[in-house]
Image 1 (cartoon, rainbow, N blue to C red):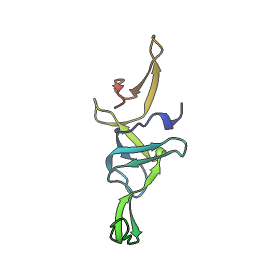
Image 2 (cartoon, one colour):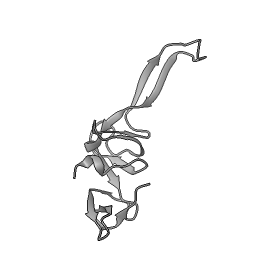
Image 3 (cartoon, rainbow, N blue to C red):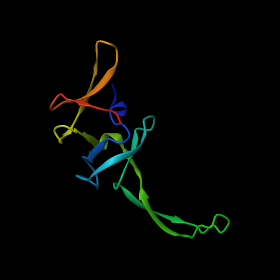
Image 4 (cartoon, rainbow, N blue to C red):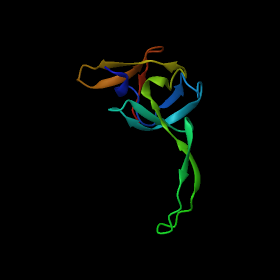
Amino acid sequence: MSAKAKVCKNDLVVVITGKDLGKQGRVLLVKPREGKVLVEGVAKIQKHVRRNPQRGENGGIVEKEALIDISNVQVICPSCGKPTRVSMKVNEDGTKNRFCKKCDSVIERS
């Protein structure tokens, strides 16, 4: 199973490499085909926006989050509170669950 399936929307993650090393945030968007995630408050960029009078928008510089690579984040386990790798286990009824590698507890998808 690839890392793409192990990070889901609304997961709490920590950045493990790059300029935002150590920052935590909630996952806002996951793009599994591109291998990218959008994390709240991480990888801020400035975008120059042109004024658009038809829509009533003012021009200026807008600050927003950028996509970062999915391999640069680790999921924080809700039960033990530590950054962890995520494993997948198949139950007897055929459903899959995500598990914390450190405390072996289930990480629910929200």
